[in-house]
Length: 404
Image (cartoon, rainbow, N blue to C red; front, side, top):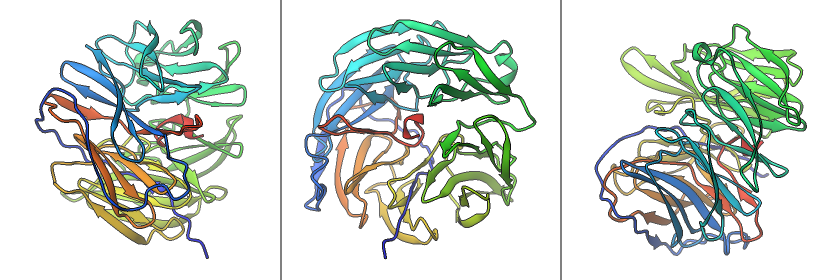
């Protein structure tokens, strides 16, 4: 009987000094990485922020060897990482110069760049569909021509200063769903006109997860919430402890997965939940005493096989149906704090650390390779990786709406 598992990363950040020039070196183990032959010729693409510049970096999916690097000076890219589609890599910068970039996915060459003239939430990810890019800034939702960078329309929230900044948009059929801290918008993708907006008592602190006609949220202190795409209430699931923060939910095996941060006295804790997507009934809960730093980020990712819980220096695999630990991988040094959601394809799961990318065997937890950034002082953040196959298929981390 096949055991189906999902991937969950719970982040715990640290900051330490590295050196400046970027040069990737890879160490490769003898463990099998590509049994299904789907990673050959593929790339792992991620972004890294420094104190004086930002880079978009592509490494070989099998060996970790550097393929291309694109430096963007005086920019801070969003922690949500890149969106990869139609042969292009789309990245969004925050302060001090909010821009949207389109790069060639094979070579890293810039195709276009536009200025949004306003701030973008640091964890927001763009969404690509049918030749258009949907981007959420601090105050508005944009539709952009993905080939030219031309702005098609934008919708501005008139009271965003009270509602907080927009999270990552999700496009389903003819509607883009996007929320800030207090309001959820459903917007027509053709006209930019609001279909409906919900400003209920629920605190929309996370981006939505869509599956089978329903939208799932994990408000900060109200548990999981499920509504349909017309904003009809389905169910809620209360968390067992008052949450200081919760991650956006993800879906696999008819279950919704999320995690919450909370305090048990003076001890920071984290609970990982698996809840039936149809009924809202809890299936299992896993408790970790090292909670994620970015509690609002969508840290769960599913490939249908493994659940990864990331402590500061460990990646733990849980059985998706039971939450029982299957294996764990410990980084070679406590300096290599795991910072991102994992992304998985074939026999490999990739996760970003404070100054490198790790590739780990999904079946056994065996080390495959690590790619370092060389002399990188001033390195501040590394995004979750995106996998791009040689046939053009992109696999995004769960914190990106592109997993919908």
